[in-house]
Figure 1 (tube, helix red, strand yellow):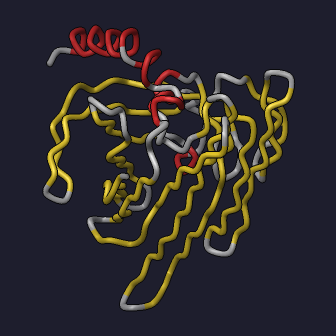
Figure 2 (cartoon, helix red, strand yellow):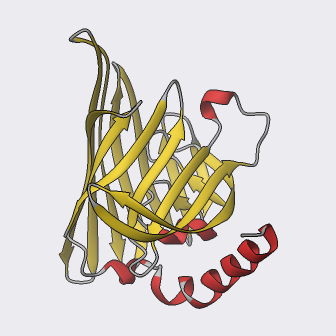
Figure 3 (tube, helix red, strand yellow):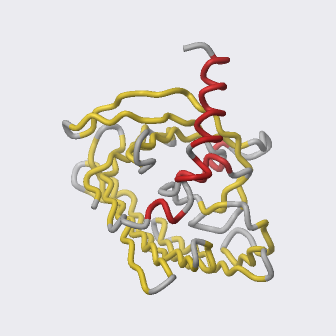
Amino acid sequence: MSKVFKFILYLLIITFITPLQAHVEHYKNLNKIEFDIYRNNKFIGKHIFSFNRDGNKLFVKSNINFEIKKLGVVLYRYKAEGTETFEDGKLIEFKSKTNQNGKEKFVNLKTEKNEYNIKGSSYNGKAPIDYLLGTWWNHSIVEAKAQISAVSGRIIHQKVNFLGKETIKINGTKYKTLHFNFSSTDNKLSKNKRLNTDVWYDEKTLNWVKASFNKKGKWEYRLKNIE
């Protein structure tokens, strides 16, 4: 598939699919997404999203837990939990706590006067309301100029490339997907803070099914279960 054709196809997807389906209301029937996390093709943990509703509010709770071991010895532990609160389809609050191998990180975000007020371990300040949290489950992130780190609150300006339609197989199930690459636009960032992540969304439902990136090994998120 030529780059020109991919770009045209991407524009068609954004124009005709995203505005109608990729907002939060598109996921109104979603209850749970469960991912297995792999590093160098070895299972190390899980990331689970739970969706709960109360009237016009939606609460999306995220739990991540993984360990890296060598010869049975735990070398690295990571545990994080966060909750996104939406009202009438708009994000009004986000809170997260992360323990990154003993290092504590956090985000407290609130929507105030049509902008985000962020207090995080890496960023304190305002952000435009059209920036999205980097939690990946909402396909609208492909449109955002920047994402907000769900771990530390830092602002990550991004470039999104549509790489084409792909049929992928996960745990014996085939998915027809839309494949995107997310990369940082700030080339001055250190390598360990630079965004370079491939994400696959189901073509029909726009549900997130896979992610892949390289950071001291090859990491993959593979969809385990969706309800």
